Amino acid sequence: MSPSHPRTPRQVINFSKQKGKEIIANFDGELITSDAGIVWIAELDKKLGITEKFGNCFQDHRHQSYVDHSVHELLAQRLYGIILGYEDVNDHDKLRHDPALKIALEKLNELEDKKGWLAGKSTINRLEYYPETILDQKTSRYHKIEPNFEAIEKSFVEFFLESYKKPPLSIILDMDVTDDQVHGNQEGAFFNSYYHGVCYAPLYIFCGHHLLVAKLRSSNVDPADGALDELQRIIGLIREKWSETHILVRGDSAYAREEIFYFCENQPLVDYVIAMGTNSVLKLRADDVIEKAKHEYEKKLAPITELMDSLFQKKEDLEEVKKLVPISTWYRSIRYKTEKSWSCQRRVVTKVCYGSDGLKMRHVVTSLPASKIPPSKLYTKKYCPRGEMENRIKE
Image (tube, rainbow, N blue to C red; front, side, top):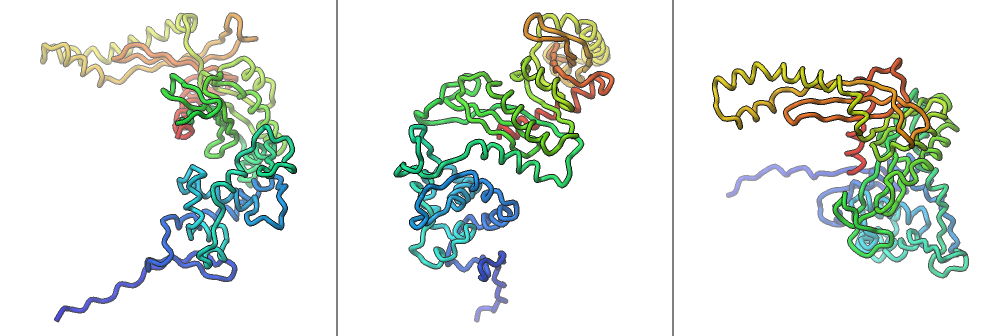
């Protein structure tokens, strides 16, 4: 006779009620989904009103008596699919049957009716595909959903502003470009040697984890193309609500442009810290700092070299030990003006590193005065965190 075992309690996950019905997830194997988390994402969306606000940025010219899926529902379904990792519109020919997605979209009737489907790829494509050749959406047979691009762009900034209960003392705007690889013959896609592939090169502007700008561009354009226009637009929107907030604009050397500097310098409470490439003049003016960094490194290396010479004869071993000696880092701040491109002198902070690999120099140009922040703190506290933001943007 086999021993009896106590029955394992059934695992149940309770979701919130919807239209008077209780939503429960268990492991009985009836309606199966691997995407149940989207139900909670949908709850968050309802509280924040993201897809609802975006839905208001479209004008629907369809005859409403024939409409099964509103613009808001199409937009939410597409967005939820992307969140779940289904980036292609084609994926929705299978996702339209997913029970979790039906619950997230509050389509309980479709959930109970096995023939009830969500929108398929062709219907969602009519939301996304907006041919420039269609001049009048009302008379178009297939493209009757008209986006208001200005309202869509504005929405990103509005979401950001609404996330604060009160205006912050300061914010940082990070600009960067990344690659969007393509694998077909998409219009406007070019081979980019930096990214080693055929791609687009969208421009992004973030404030922390808030996306403020996403501008799709061809990969054969200047990395700073459109950056000034977007900065002017979003800073103007921010200033409408936050007149006393200090704004720091940050970017790599691709954005070290006179027009960006000039714009920031002529805006109240707007500063910048942007990387710039080195040149012979900057290197010459940092000559004394270079010598100090070299001398400091050699001073730290000397006792180790003497010890290694007494113990080993191979020079290779000494080279490996040199890598263990901390590099010497020095900073200096100067007033600098290019020969032609800059309209005035600006503050440039130079970082000099000397170590086993020799000399390395980095420069940033900034409108923050030396009286407010010393060069070492400006570089490490204001500019260096941009590297972490760059990693997140490229992800």
